[in-house]
Image (cartoon, rainbow, N blue to C red; front, side):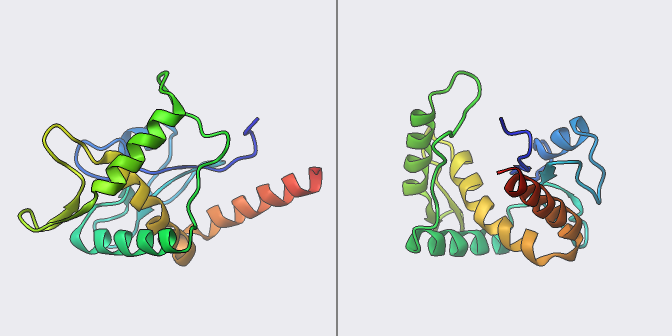
Amino acid sequence: MYKQACIVFICENYPVGRAGEIAAALNIGQDEDRGNFCIMREFGQNKNVPGVGKTARSTQLMVAKMQRCLKEHALMFSSDFATFGGKNPESVVQRIAEQLLRFRWNEEDKKYNAKGPGQTDDLAVVMHMAPYWSIVFNDDKRYAGTRQRINNIQLTVDHIR
């Protein structure tokens, strides 16, 4: 069904993050993506690794981009939103909404998060990374090959229709 889709893996890059594991499993090197797979990454000094680091600066940019997307009603879930591990899609969307509503500046920690006692914010962070990374993806020349592959895939799909 999704044979022609470009799959983008959205991963935070931190020492025990999944980005490196996914890159290794897909046999993706430092400066490339494979076929229809693309792993979100940032480039620059000591940043050419899979995933995106959640620094104070990148988090500010993520929050600003997310706020703009929300104001413009630019975010939506696909009607065929899928989950893994037997999770009900509606329950995952509900968890995302709950985490996004809790996501705010924490004056004590001096950072944005949605954590509370016994709570996580992983889904809220990923939801902020996706719109932010679209800026990196569309602006960085090192993604030109991946952008071209996506355009070619879309042209092929449009031609088949």
